[in-house]
Image 1: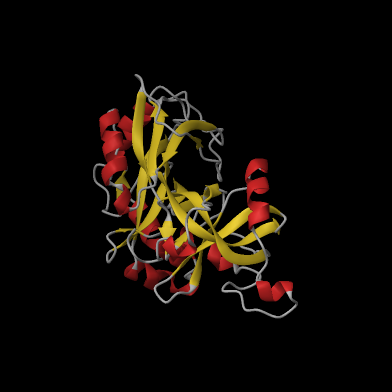
Image 2 (image 1 turned 90 degrees about the vertical axis):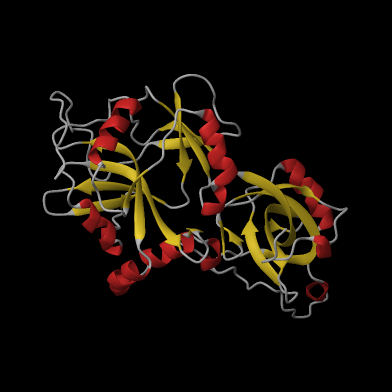
Length: 346
């Protein structure tokens, strides 16, 4: 059993379940200078863990309970001292692909009565990166450097499914993670001030997602063809079928003005003839990878004749980007048949 490290005088009044976790602001470059520390940004689910006398509670970033879906994690956390509150990320490792898998994580969350079976088949890991409370005190006012030291002490003898998140004060190490760890499923790097307290529900950290530009084919838009709000993009698979791969963030005024003259409805639709577009209408909610409150998406189908240059991150599951892509520009110089084939290395 682990010993609790306590400092009387720090009350737990602000530590009430559920708690809004501290947030990270997206940045395009890593902050530099003294006082910064860096950690890998995991492609999983943010979770706060509350260790009670007789149970363990897991809550999502939005405050929803999820303990029943992950009995393997709650069991692994039980030996920790009652009153401990942790912050971390749930991930599931895909042995075949040798990387974390968000789709397997979603399957775990939706397992229902099969939760125990799924836990045996696809065990989860809880990657812990912060300690918010020990048995008798809140650590929210403590600087990150102190919280990290206590966390390392706390997790010295825990089951393998509880993982201490890597943490470094070396910018070179952070850049190495970006260069070499992305293939294993990390999305980027989170930068944190070592002297900063834990800010409940507020931003204070910085996150850099690894992004790259690529091409995709516009197959639909939200809004109107003459005034698109976002674009829906796809790629041909090895059988020549146009597969949906993602939706963009809202277009700027300049991007809407550029795209509108280039887009058109399928020829058969313009003539009033029924035509089978390669994607269903509306777009199924499951295609968006949204687990909480998913809704089908109505959109305007367009002739798949325009290539878009898009900025994407590493969160790709079964050929679809989980996060919105960023439309950069239309590529009038690129044929739709020159766009990389889905499932084939670029």
